[in-house]
Length: 286
Image 1: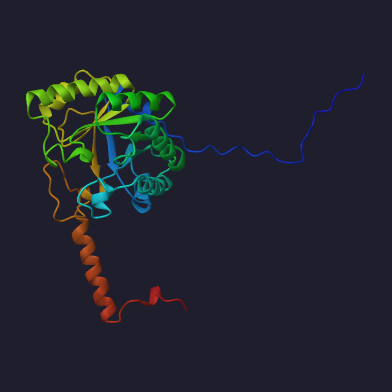
Image 2 (image 1 turned 90 degrees about the vertical axis):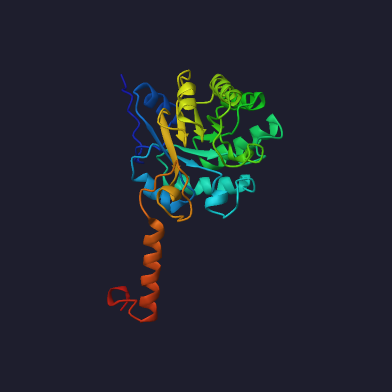
C-alpha cells in the first residue's frame, strides 16, 4: 500500500512576532484586587515617552492639558481632536508596551452620541491607544460611556475639577466644598461605574470627599489633588520634573528641577560657542 508523504515546504516559516498589547482594564482590575497603587503619568511627546518606556510607570495619559503645557494656551479649550491624535500617536510609538489613554478634547464628544462615537472611534483606530478619557458625569456622558464600551472602546471617567468646564466651575480651584456638590460627585462616580467606566480620575477635591467616593466604588480611582485614598496618582511629567519654575500648585511635588538644569546647560553651551571651544576634538569628523 502506498504511503502518503508528508508535505514539506521549502520556505521556512518563522515564528510570528507578537505585538505589544497591554490591557488596561486587566491592569486596573489586578491592581485594585491586589491593593497595589497605580502610577499614571501625563506625557505629550515621543522623547519623554521613550524614557517612560524604561520605567516602572503603570500607564500613560496623553492629556488635553497639552494646550497649556505644550502650546502655551491659558486653558484646554482650544485643543483639537487632530492635535490629540497627533500627540497620542507620538507617545504610543515611544512606549508601545505601556497602556496609553487619550483625552477626548472639548466638543469632540458633546454635540451628539453619534458624533462622539465617531470621534472616539477615530482616536482609537488611528492612535493605537488602549482607552479614551471623558470628563463629567451627566446622564448624557453615562449613556455615551455605555455605548462606547458596548462597541469595545474602554473609557476612563473624570470628576471634580473638569478643566473643559472650568468657566462654569469658577476657575481652576478646589471642588466639592458644599454638601450638595459632595453628593453630586458621589452620585456621578457611581453612575460612571454603572455605565461601564473602568476607572475615574478625581481632580482637586478634599481628601475626605475622596474617601467617601472610593468607599462605594469597585473600579479604581486615580487622584490629582485628591489626597491619599485613591487607588493611584497622576501628575504631568513636565510638572513633576520642575520644567515650569512659576507653577507651584499645592498638589504638585517636583521630583527634580529640570528648569534650572536646562538653563545651566544652555548657558554653558552658549559660552562654549562664543569662546569657540565647542565643538571639541571628540565632536569633529576627520
